[in-house]
Length: 591
Image 1 (cartoon, one colour):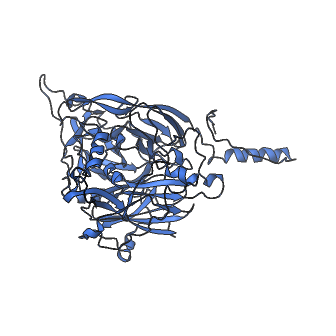
Image 2 (cartoon, one colour; image 1 turned 90 degrees about the horizontal axis):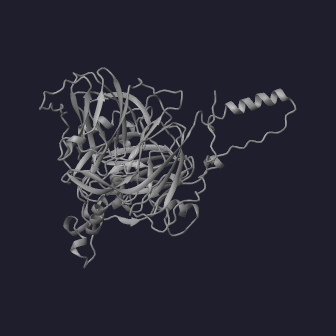
Image 3 (cartoon, helix red, strand yellow; image 1 turned 180 degrees about the vertical axis):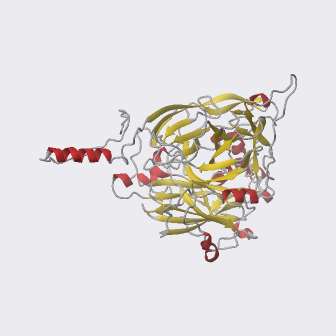
């Protein structure tokens, strides 16, 4: 039976005109057919969920120190949102903090609702202190774990939370139903204001200070000072199978994740189901999510859930600490009075264990054969990596504290992306405002070189610009993402807004089409929104440009996007309402 939830605030209205039909029985049959065949328009049991997000400063104590952190509704992490596939979210964000803010719904397709995507100066201008904006969007065809976070400067260090998408009402998971579900958000913590940390780096041109701790659901865990009493406990009964929804919400660090003595069966990633596979370790880049089943089949005890860095950049500083939570069997023996039983600790991979990271990322497959684009309209080759900007003569040493008196920068295809400040890119596109951006982002690097070898210093300085790449609605796209060894090579989590894409291949060294095309998986590649670009290597993604708007493509290490490791696709409207970007909301923040 089809049940419709009607609300006066739902803005989509569906009007159908029918000619008079003399035969009343034919009219009845036609009406019944139309009613039952509108599943693509009116969702079965679809609901509208209303939330208020108040962004504010909140005293938070971690690592023995209390400081004012920017939070949503006074919570760190922020509230978990739970919906079903097909539901609509209406989230009113009020900014009571001292910083500009936007909220990005990471991984949500935002079909025709690009105004709700959230990246600052890309799809909207920021919500100023004292201002507000209501994000309205519908979840369409996605199930699993996503998340939301601030997309303005480094606010997402503390402004983030889980977005859990259950199957449609009456439908079930394509795997064993778990007894319990737990979201585990991996984060980073600074004993400082993260905005002050990035502003200092911007001033000096040097790399920002690394974090002081990693966290699981906001708590550092037993291995840090002043943290044991608040360590997260995940209780289990012997024999039960539970679902862990793991999110890397860290700002700048890929992370290994393990549960001592327990195997993990991966069943989903980035709100797409995958062909199940079993592993003892996960590796997630910032932005990525992984859903795993875990069976409590070990001796009743307490086992550490642990995460620590996968640090692939040779010689670069990183936070080498380990965050922990505890998987606690309810039947675990109690310690004798006055004593404690230390949980079992997993053996973590070495910080630079690229082999383990690669074995994990290359294990993903879609559950069945999928329709991968094979006729490609745009065959693109994007380099991605760091750079060093020479300081002009007479510049203060205090502003040139990068290597050898330079400033750090980053780029794609030698263009260091610069955000506008007077308009958002989407506004400028829709209103045809000139001078905000150009659409001449190069389809290939301006110079061909040995990308992962010893790169000439003459290629270390990218050119700043706000260049977009234009696509017509419905065109097919292949992007070869090629890492570079400029200054250093490292793993980059590359995120595309507004789209999922198929990862058809990855490898090391320089991509060679004559050699590497044969490695493409065009049968059952995984569908993701964030790809791990291997250290000193390449990744190939494919998608269809079926969502009009301006969509950011960037490294999800926030230090890198700030340096310019980004570009954006401008996807033009197609034909008719369903292929056209919706009108801008009346409350869209002004610049």
